[in-house]
Length: 144
Image 1 (tube, rainbow, N blue to C red):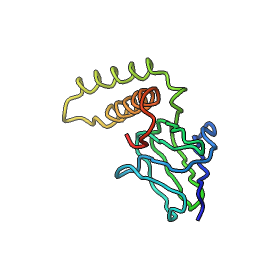
Image 2: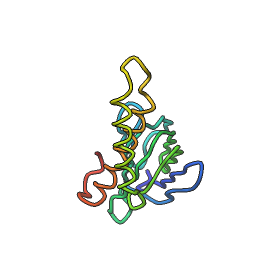
Image 3: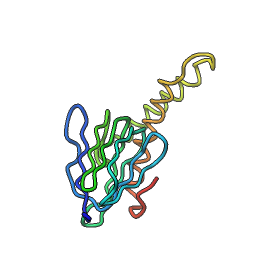
Image 4: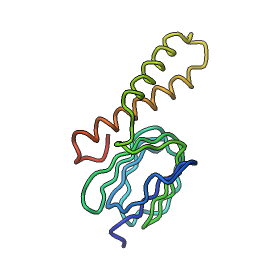
């Protein structure tokens, strides 16, 4: 059984991560998934949230992700995301502005109308803020 996983995270625009990890946590459609080397093959849909992985050196790396798919093999995880951003690349002030705009929009949409776009914007902004905040603080636990 492999002791290391290759992790690749790509968006339509670029390769975001190409690294090696000892464990990975990612937001599946129905909750967070924990992946270790030797995991059974699987394909899953991703939600909005945080991807965290422990690199070979033991450091936890965090990324914000919004939607996509992940392919898990015993020795490799490939994540194809609509949006993904490393914690150190997140513009927190922009994310906070997006959160405020989404909250304002939600407060003005009548309950009878579709709120899904505003809710998606709010979830995405919250995920970006959380990833940036966690990257600057506690580093041990992978799960949010």
